[in-house]
Length: 95
Image (cartoon, rainbow, N blue to C red; front, side, top):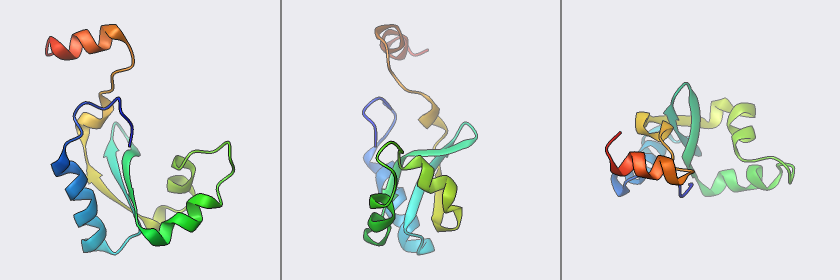
């Protein structure tokens, strides 16, 4: 999970864990803006796959390479992230 997504909630994280339990898939990603991304839940059985990724690759590569292992949870607000002071000000202003 990243620190720049202000709309991540404990409830969302619980949904990821519940989706893992319900589907049995070892990876549960959030879905937003036409992509699957963070936050992502990785069950213990997915960790060896993460360790096999090249050092220069992020876990997003695993999501693309092994879609059969991935369940998703809808999270439209995941497209909102805060990387600059202007974005933070806009977030506080409710934009």
